[in-house]
Length: 295
Image 1 (cartoon, rainbow, N blue to C red):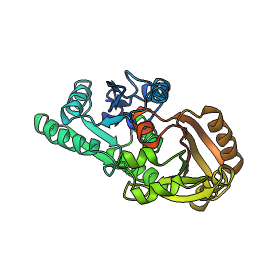
Image 2: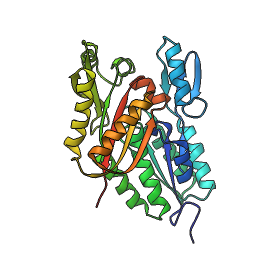
Image 3: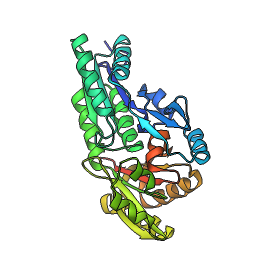
């Protein structure tokens, strides 16, 4: 008999740094655990008590750099218990890169607590080794497969495929936010301070942010972003794609048109980078994400 989450009663859980649009998370039954963002002397729950638009407005009004904090193991345990009460016997919990945050570790600690409380329940915690909708794309693919009744080993294999085959490249206005937040080294940050040099960032296989390249002037930098994507995923490939932006919607729409001219885009999402990731990437960040679909 099928349970509320499909044949195996699998529940998919992630955190707010996945930047999944709310309607999509609701449609697929994905539970989202919020991180916290501290700005202007106040604390907010990412995407719950502070939207991306509100965050960028506050960021423009304050000189103080916002900070972020991860959910506690107890926060995770509460959500895991809720899923079990709704009938889940297996949980797949997919989170922000462990190299960037302690969120993954909080989930691992909660897993130990809950599996001890509920011996019949299995929790798999998956390190996405990435951030923003690079996580979200993994989570959405897995949640769709879970709805089709795929088993846990198949879901983990899908998550691994998306993690290993993503091409991500982003332009940041400045590396100052990444450097001050401890997400990128001082030497790399210096590059971005040079006159009209535009840094292009990505996330490496270890889940760390790094400056993948740089270009002089905005137009060259934009061209280079699309070249870098095609080095990993050749032009003409059938892909699922997203453009991620921090308060740059019009530009993001232009970038999506460019992606559609290069690739056979089966699914396209324009994603506004949320408060927590926006704190570290900074306003004006814009990037492209593509994953080739299996034939």
